[in-house]
Each structure stands twice: as structure tokens, then as C-alpha cells.
Image (tube, rainbow, N blue to C red; front, top):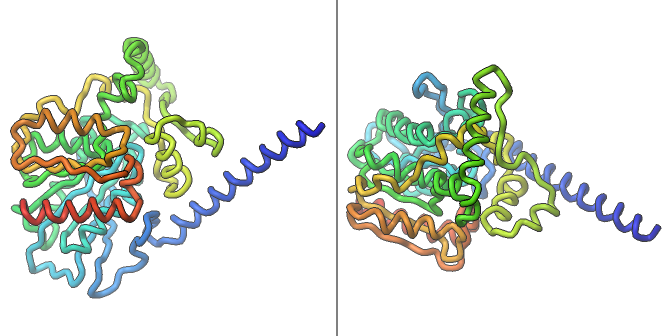
Length: 353
């Protein structure tokens, strides 16, 4: 009887904690008029300060939702350097991409953070499609839009890719020479991980997973519902038992501390047909722009940055910058690590834009 009471008590505690977390994160995005969930986010536009401008534009027939940040005392008749910020896998513009976009705007840059097509507040069906060619095109699309924005100096356009957005940025800038300076933060090579597993943990199941992806596409083509891979929801107990920093801290970030209804860990299983045959480092020698790659010294994803950095043989003035003591997810939000990353980015963009 005592054991049963203990189990019931533990279950009640977990449910109560989950409910409390859900309520607190709900208040975070609901309390901000722009539904931003990062610390220090803009709550209103004020004259003489950094302002945020929600915008929409069409990319290959799909409506893209984005936020443009303008510097303090912005004057559209003047010329400003600009930076496009590509969000992580599962992420959206209201999370870490928005944080870095705002911080760069505070330093005098016009910035844009856009939700990927099929994700976030952007259009596209099936929802949560995550194909590399679309994510790469999203970055080209940000360049299209921000290049026409009043006050932007098109000769001083940079890009910052975070996590999966970093891998797609490496691909986009191989051909898109409108970007004069290329930076990544906690770069994640989505193709390598979807193909080989995180830290090469699924090498023995590549063909099996390709078959699952093929079957999922066949199911969609005959009118069936899309199959999804990833994680739809998770308990505190499951989070605590997750062995890798990337996923444990990622679940905490996306499902607890910085949760947003537009953000999800899910992606269509059919997307794996494209993801598993793609790699962020393929043809990376085409990047000739200045390249900065930032990663935490304790990030369990660091091997991907190391691999890409070594292969980027033709990048001008390339630099690998380590944030001492930081894990992958901590670079998204932890003030001391964000400040180090932002300071390095500002140094890099000032030199190269």
C-alpha cells in the first residue's frame, strides 16, 4: 500500500510539474505582443530604440512569416549593414534566432529572422516538412527580401546560421555570393545526423530508415496522412533520462523554458529521403567568403563544426571560435555565452561587411 502511494505521489508530482511548466511557458509567449520567448525581448516599438517589424512575403508561392529588426534611430534614407539569421531545426523566429537578430540590431544592423517554409508561422503543406533544398531556399529568400528593405546596403549583407540553420547556411552561401560574410553558431549537419545518427549511432540502420522514408512518401502520394518522426511531447522524467546534452537540454529549451506553439521536434518521415542523401559539407570548398564558425567547447555537436571547418578550404580569413564551457543549447540562451558569441560576431561583421 505504501509503495502504491509512493508511485501515485510521484506520478502526481510529475503531472503537476509538467502542468506548471506548461503554464509558465504559455505565459511567456502570451505575455509578449510579438510572441517572442527569449529574455530581453522587445515588448513594444518605441521611437529611438530597436524596433521589430513582422512581415510576410512570398517565396516560390509559399507565404513566409518573418521579423525584421531595425536599429535605434533607424532612418530609411541612410545605409545600414544587414544580417539574415537562419533558425535551428525545430526552432522558429521567436526563439534564439530572434534573440541574435535583436542583439545584432542593437549594434546597428538591420536583421531578419524568418520561419522556414512549411514550419512556424510560414505556409506550406504538409506541415513540418524539413527538406534541405527548402531550408536552403529559405536563406536565399531572406536575402531577396532584406536586400530590398529600405536602408539596407546590399554590399554589406551577412548571414548567421544557428544549429540546423548553420548547416543550411553553409550550403546556401556556396552559391549565394550576395552574402559577403558567413557565420555559424553551434552548426548542425542535418544530413549527416539523419543519415548516420547522432554521433554515428545509427550506421547499421541506414537502409531500413530509407525504406521507412520511402514508404512514408508512398503513403502521402495515395492520399494518406503524413507520417512523422521526432518527438511530439515529453515528460520531465523522460527529459531527465535523456543521455546526451543536445537532446536533453534541447527538450528543456523547446518544451519547457522557451516553448512556443509554432515550434516542434517533429518532421515528416518522407523528408528523410532528401535529408539522408544530403550533406552540409558537400561542395563546401565553393565558399570563398570570410567564414566564422562558433561552437561551445563542451558541445556534443562540436565534431560537426570541426569537420566542416576543416573542409572549407577556400573560405577567406576563416576562424573557429570556441565558447569555453558552453554546450550546444546553452549558446541559444545563456547570457554569458550569448554575449561572447555576439561580441565575436560583431567583430567579424565589422571587419568583413
